[in-house]
Amino acid sequence: HFCQPLKAGHLNIGQNHIHGNIPSELGSITRLQFFSVEKNNLTGTLPDILFNLSALHTLSFMTNQLQRISPKDVDRFLPNLKLLAMSDNNFDGPFPPSFSNATSLQTISAGHNKFSGLIPLEL
Image (tube, rainbow, N blue to C red; front, side, top):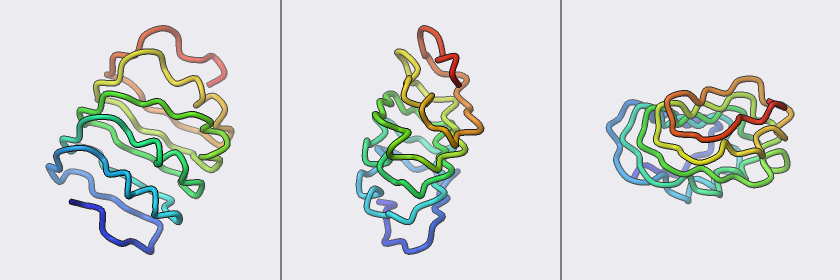
């Protein structure tokens, strides 16, 4: 289990061969600004609680086996998000339209997934 009590704003646990789901307990780290779990073997769905971390400016979970992302109201809950790295996973279905409301978002990396339909032109 990789969720330890954390007071600092950065959590980088990439490239550690971590398996399983991203724990919802991460939502209790309200000061979290930088979260990276890239290049692991994580599966399942991104917990909705991640999208309640209003201090978050960098969110990277690329190169895993994650399958579902369905954030609602990203603009309200992630007002400071600048970088979203979600490439090289197994995301499918339409690209989440709520990301077009994240006004601070500067960079999105979403390649090598199974998204269908159009990416919102507002991005």
